[in-house]
Length: 306
Image 1 (cartoon, rainbow, N blue to C red):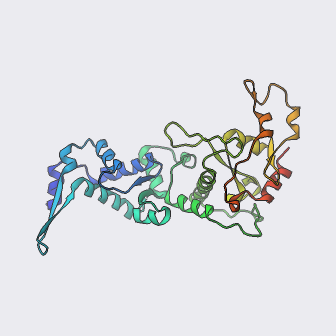
Image 2 (cartoon, one colour; image 1 turned 120 degrees about the vertical axis):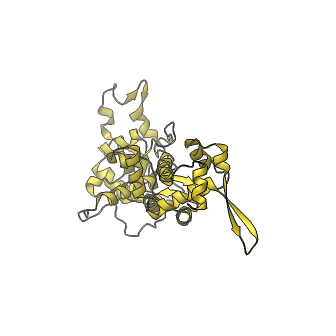
Image 3 (cartoon, one colour; image 1 turned 30 degrees about the horizontal axis):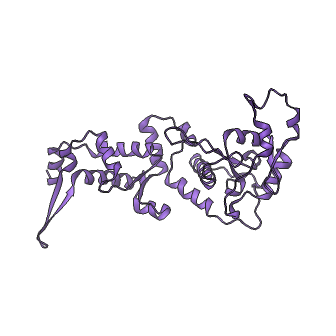
């Protein structure tokens, strides 16, 4: 038995397999991203708490003697075990290493990959059918989201695909769908462009706002920034069914049929939600390159607005 194995047995440390499963679950808990393991990092202590490690287990050190330099190097046993478990997950392509994530986000973090996301759902027992509705980040989705936000709008931009969409596999479609959603709601700071509502769930993991297509998917609308709007659920629905649209100056235009609905409809107690649409102020990013395409807005006005 090696010196390290003896120390692991001596202090009754959890196995690497146990730690790997817990790391995957922890990443899922934190929406796919946790900080690099360093001294004093809360995540290191949190995982230790979940394994109910005592002070002796947390403070145990391995000693390596460097004879040529005549010195002893000490390394924390728990940190070493934690890092090795994460390193193995990275080798299996279930998570990205901090140096890899840093090249994408400028943050040294461990991040779930799509395969890691699937593995986490399997471990926790969440049906795969719920994957696209969850806010979990993956390296692939993060990469696509950043690409969308950093894209330059083509001079001959069209908001829809003229030809029939190519059939893509389910995984690629899921990444594209979630990348579009993440890019749009982050671009608008998680706010509805019409009412300004910004709200997330009590556990901070799900935002109320949604990414809406201006030209819908059913009409081959593109999954990009210029065909997207950040809308709360109410304004997403009213936009999709044609209760309002936008002018070329990005002012709210309400449906002509608004005056035809009964007085009892479109109200929340004594507040008329639909009437309020006509006075809504649209909030867009400072970078005009990322504003919705006029052609997409015009198409919606001519084809969806009632």
